[in-house]
Length: 242
Picture (spheres, rainbow, N blue to C red):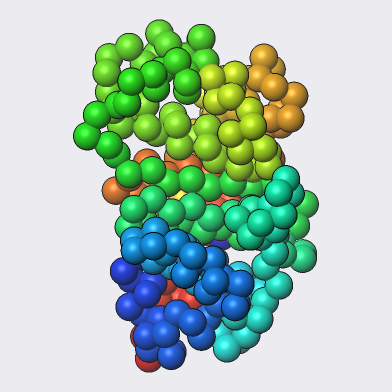
């Protein structure tokens, strides 16, 4: 099972005030990373790190007071800076922020997971199709639908995160094939969920990954090394107001 928490920057930071503020829920390294970024970027960083620690504590059955002390390593595997994908013993982690939106996930240790959320732009930037669409996907996205394009980008970002390669792999080399997967819905109250599978012509390091859309005001996606049941956790469950 993969647990996800989708919320907003404002909700996380405001609700954290009931337990002493966001600083009480994150590590010194998390605070330093947030303070190194200015304005809204810093707030997004802080909210994302608070949300991930809260979800991790909830999933593991830890006390809220222990959230700041849970081992979450974000060392970049390429440069050593504190901006790499999050890692913690016995689980797999992923997080994403986009403007005011926050999405975090905790999964089983041996499962590769990745999440992404993207706010819809007013228009698609020049060169998007060349940079993002696989040659087989151009014919599927020739109607100028902004949400469809950003949803595809979100799925690809989630896959690249799950693979641990980020934009080292050109997104246009990744082709997703939509296939029905006979698994329980990853979203409660839906009878069936469609998953996309990484096609055989995609780069080898992406093979074996699957991705599905998550409902929300903006495009959101979850990628995993196997289709899985997904449990949505509310912010109130991980950070009660009283």
